[in-house]
Amino acid sequence: MPTAAQFQPAAAPYRSRAWIWWIVGGCAVLILVAAGAMALGGAYLFNQFQHGSFSCLPSDFPTYPGATFSGQYTYVGGNVAPGDTHECQITLESQDDVTTVTGFYQSHLSSGDWTIKSYDSANGTISFSRSSRPATVGTLQLLGRGQHTEVQIRLDS
Image 1 (cartoon, rainbow, N blue to C red):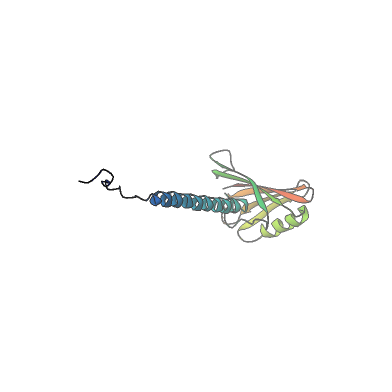
Image 2: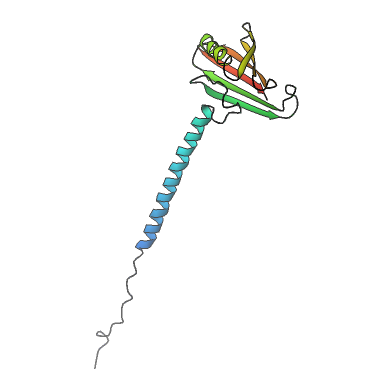
């Protein structure tokens, strides 16, 4: 006659829960990769914006080398030059002095599809237009800020 000590019920098989840790680890890695990609993408877009890639100015408009964009305003509607419906205002900053930046814009706005209409040295304002479309007009004002220059551009097109 068997005794109770000899009778043992079958033990439940051991179930590993390692798969849960694989899923949690995989999700954590995906989150880190996504955060890194977003950070790199954001830095790239910020850098592109700072150097004028998303500017409202035409692509052939001369931009001073090394200048950074510090502001932009775009307006569509009335209250612009006759024949135009779009106004673009950009502010650039350069570490170079006013004389150097002025020389650059005087030479580059006198070539290609751009023409200088007038230059007022008293207030550092250059008035210009597009040769292929004379209704596209603008002003460029150069302001000395100590050792660097602020360039304010307004273009009606």
